[in-house]
Image: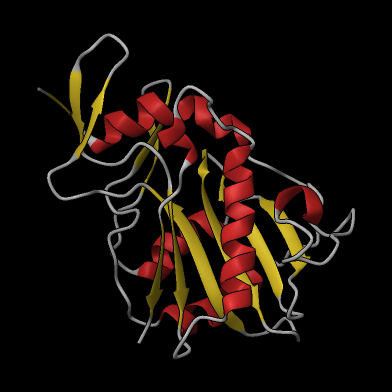
Length: 219
């Protein structure tokens, strides 16, 4: 059984996938009418940037750490152009949310969901849920490549068995600080990312069309 490093798996598998990032789609097209209000044509470019939310996000993540993006390396023409080395959740989240805007809309409870993606690897996306005033961070979400214990095992089309350091397909984690995550926030966020994933659905690879979703309360 061959072993493939996390860097190789991301370079070899996600280059083609990175082309399916959505940008400027309507709320109904992306997340469904039950979860989101109708998006406006100019709302994506009006998304608040990382610089505008830095203090709120630092307060939201606090000193929390994690291994969601640690060790991920993005390459282009075999040259490293981005690596994620910090274990601080804020640093990992900010490295993605500092990228271009992808989505900006009100969800059904009047809060706002803003999505941005990592400029060199569009499969990495970060979402912020803001309160009705648009000032306080209520929840966040991040796509990442899960690293299961013992590696991720796949069989190639030519019959070879491979062990990857990480799952080559994205997972989604939601972060929140309230005792329970608001079900409307969860519904809207998961719906958005599932519908985004479906735009690149591979009928011959059902596993690539499924996304593992977890939620983590920050304390």
